[in-house]
Image 1 (spheres, rainbow, N blue to C red):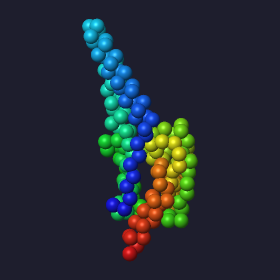
Image 2 (image 1 turned 180 degrees about the vertical axis):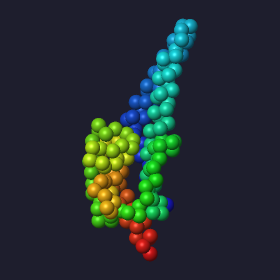
Image 3 (image 1 turned 135 degrees about the horizontal axis):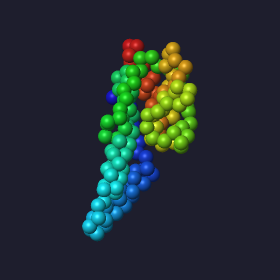
Image 4 (image 1 turned 90 degrees about the vertical axis):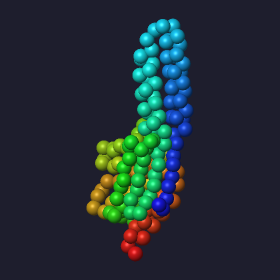
Length: 154
C-alpha cells in the first residue's frame, strides 16, 4: 500500500443519526399507544442503509491500482493504473449538487466524491475523459499514483 485516506461526511452522518434517533423515538411512542409504527420502521431501515453505505469513503493506492470503497464496502471500485498519463493530472471543483457516491457527468467524466470541494482529475492515455477523486490531500494522492507508475517501470 502506497497511500490511504479515509473521509467522513460529518454533516451528513450527523443529520442521518439525528433522523434515525427521531424515527426510533417516534416508533417507540407510536407502538406505546398501541398503533402500528410500520412507516417509521421502514424509515429507520432506510436511514440505517444510507448510513451503512455512505458513512465514509476510503481511497487506497496499492500496487498499480486505486481502490475506492464507500461505507462498509458494498460499493467499491478498483481502478487499474496502467494507462494513467502521469502528465495529465488536474484539479477539478466538485459542486455540492453532485452529492455523494460514484457517478458520471454529461461529458463522460467519472466522479468519486463524499463531499463538495476539490478533486484530483486523472487522465488515462487514449481517453478524453477524466477520473475525478475527491480528496483532502491532492498532492499526496497524485504523488502516490506517480510513484506506483514509476515502480512498475523499474
